Length: 83
Image 1 (tube, helix red, strand yellow):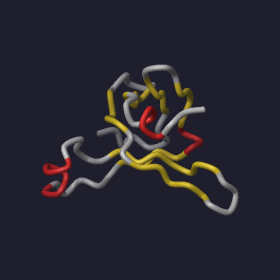
Image 2: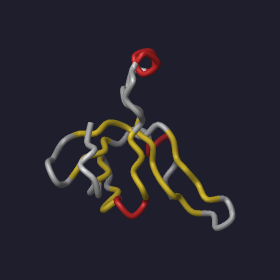
Image 3: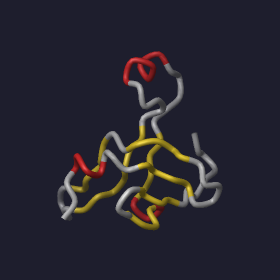
Image 4: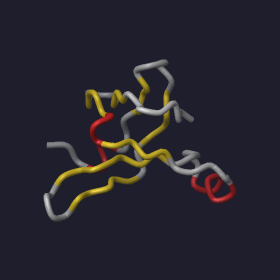
């Protein structure tokens, strides 16, 4: 079992280029089927800066997640939308 607080502490890394995308801020859950649809990474990890930013949050669909490890979450984005 993985707690939400533990999930938010993991670095999210794009396996295509090794770039750190940030940390998970929110989770999109499909209530009817009880499954995770996506992880959401804010455009800035600083909440105050994100308020003034015009960048949209990065949404990582469940099928783009390759591995949830002890310290990192490895993802392979379908589109090159890395931050």
